[in-house]
Image (cartoon, rainbow, N blue to C red; front, side, top):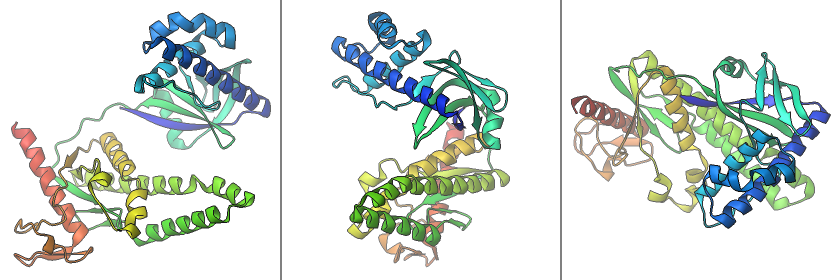
Length: 357
């Protein structure tokens, strides 16, 4: 299993200028290569290398391996849509491999630039440092907000999933980001209030429109994304730990395309479209894989309307957003927890069908 780890580079001003110049030259070469690929309808990196390798080396003075990486980057982008010619931002990512980037000890990295190899320090948490012995494949040099970062692919190995004794159902929602079948809910009112505060401030700055307001808006543009990512990480970690410690797998709703399949009132649209549910599911999936906890995605149809006691399905079973009351047998409880119990049962049934097949 491969994961991507972020490391922040700490170059000197001279090294930063060299990195930036290298990045601009690399992406200019990518623009040139994109023109060649589009003109010749060439989406094969070996063919494009035959067509343009020597011209790129001569025109942009890139090293041999950096030219090869530029060709690979252009081909990957051009393959997505051959009807248009790709363009590349001057500060787009540079793709490095082991031939042009190497790790020197626990806090140094040697990286190729237009001025040759440069040795510079990097910083990261204990988790990032522990993963560097497993580096596999490429690393992407990213320039963001005046800082340089390396996004490194590491091989963390595969942990074989266990044979769980049951499944922990997880229901994803808007008021409560997640609720499990044990009755625990995650980040409800507090997160909603913080999100609303971010939204009000963002709207106020956009409406004001002054230079200082736009500068502040630019500085804050990633704050809500980092907040959502941190919350999702913590929720996923808690759920996976609970499932592992109780010898259970995790059952999730298959919510692919949910925003296109569902409609909400105008007042709820921002909430409906703003939270990163796909990111939460991704975090749950990879953290569970690292812990050896199996994850099963089930059909979400009628999970919020099905009674876990008698199996009755009715819209009337959900009289309010928060409460569930079965019109057939009288069972009542929290609506999100009840839905999570249905998800857990469907996951158990799905796992039993797999074993029987």
